[in-house]
Length: 256
Length: 262
Image (tube, rainbow over all chains, first blue to last red; front, side, top):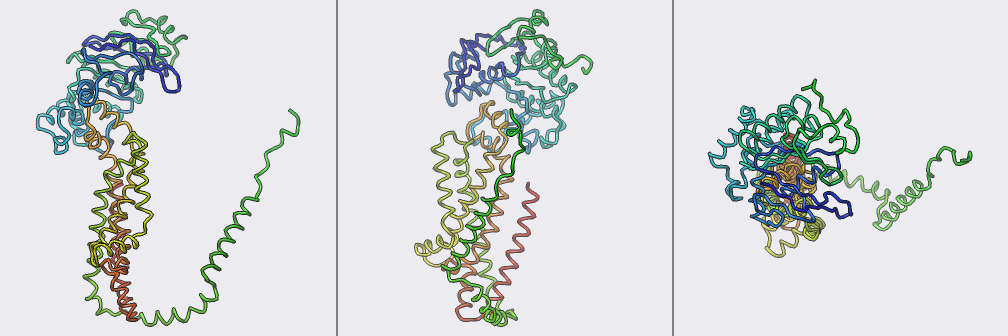
C-alpha cells in the first residue's frame, strides 16, 4: 500500500510541482495517472521512490516512511519498488542479461555483486526475460534491440528485482502503436498474474481507459480526478485537461 | 518605423582582426629579439647541420646490441608508469566529475590537484625523483606515473560527465549502493573510453620515457647523453632510429586498438 499524505513539492525557483496531494494506492491496483505535460505526473511518480525529493508531507510504502528513510533503509525500500522509464534506461553496452541482473543488486553486498551473481539470480533473470518473451536475447548487447524489446528488458529488470510495486513513467512514449500495445499488455499481465501494484503515467487517454482499473487526473500539481475508469468520461477528461480532448491525446483504435 | 531603422545590418568592422594581427606580429618580433634568434643565424648554421648529418650517416649498426636493453627498459618504464597512473586515476576521476559527487568542494579540489599534476613538466618531476631516490628506473617510473594520473584522470572525468544519466537513475531506483551504482551504471559506460585514454597516455609515455634518461632517470635517454657527449654521432643516429621504430610501432598498434574500442 502506498500512502501520500499532504505531499507538496516546491522547486527552488518557487514553482509548485505538486500541491497538497493525498492519495492511497491499494495492493494490486493498476492506476494510470493522466494530465498535460507539466501537470506533475512525472514528479509525482518519482516522489514515490524518492528519485525526486518532496518539500512537504510524507509518503509511506507498506507503512514505512520513505520520506524519512536514509542509507540502507532507503535502499531497502527502493528495492521493493521497480521503475520503468520512457527512455528505457538500460546500459546499452552491457548484455541484456546483465541489465536484468542489475535489478538484483539490492539483495547482495557490493563486493558480492562485483564477482558475479549466484546461479539462482541468473535463473530468475532468465525467467523474467521469458515472461516478457525475449529470453532468446539474453546474451545480446542491449543496444542491438528495438525500442519495444528494450522496454521489455526494462520490465524484466523490474521482475528480477521482485518488486512489489511498479512505477512506469511514460513507458510507451518512445514506442510505435504496435509495440505500445505489447508493452502495455506485458504490464497488465504482470499486474494481474503477480498482483504487483502498478502505477503508470500515460499521455494517451484511450490507452488509460483500456488498461487502468483506476485513473488519477493531475492538473497544475493538483489531483483533479480520482476514480474508476467508468467515471472517466470524455467530459471529465476535458475538465482534467482544462479543454476538450485533442486528437494527439488518442492513440487511435485503428492502429491497435 | 522610419526608413533609416529598416537599413540592412552592416558587417562588423575589420579593426579587431587588424589589431590581432599587429599584436601577434609584435609578440613574434619581441620573442625573436629577446631570445636572440634570427634568420641570419639559422642560415649561417646550415653548414654545421650538414656536417652533423654527414657524421651521423651511416648509423653504427653494431651499436644496436648495446641499446636494445635500455630501449626495453624505457618501454618497461612507460608500462609501469602508465599502469600506476591509471590505477590512481580511477578514484581521482570519479571525485572530479560533478555528476559522480554532489559537493562542489570535492570535485573542485580534485580538479585543482589534477591541474597541478599536469603543470609540472615530466623532466622536472624526473629530476626531483632522481634527487630523492637516486639514479635508475624508479624515479623515471614515478615521474611518468604522476604525469599519467593527471592526464588519464582529466580525460576520464570529462567523459564521465557526458555519460547517459538514464542507467544511473535506474540503478538508484533498484536500491543500489554507491559501489553497485558505479559498477553497474558507470563502469560499462566509461570503460572503453578509459582504456583508450590509458593507451593514449602509454603512447605519450614511451616518447617521454625516451628522454627521461637525460636527467638520470634510466632508459635509453642516458645513451643519448653519452653518445652526444663523446661526439659519437653515428651511435646517436642508431638510437634515434631505434626510438623512431619503437614509437611508430607502439603508436600504430595503440591507435588500431583504440579504434576497435570506441
